[in-house]
Image 1 (cartoon, rainbow, N blue to C red):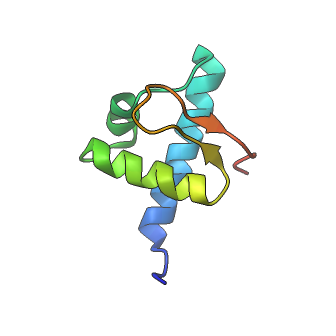
Image 2 (image 1 turned 45 degrees about the vertical axis):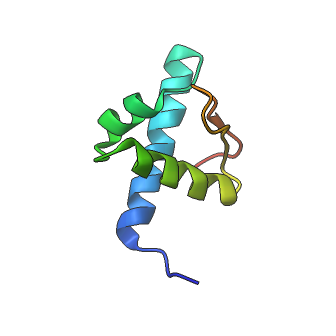
Image 3 (image 1 turned 90 degrees about the horizontal axis):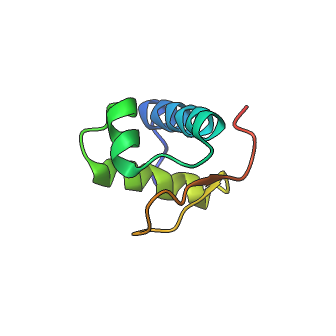
Length: 77
């Protein structure tokens, strides 16, 4: 099993904060591209990877290939 890097954990914390803020202000989840730009990921596939990690951790739900389906399941604090 791979040890989680501090950088990856920090990226996921920023990703969770952005998703929560976006949903609070817009009423729906951000697109992969909006997440990519806001969180400074180099590609959409990196966004998807981090969403999958957060989903496995039980922090979000996410339906691949369907836009704006990210839902926060737990408090990120």
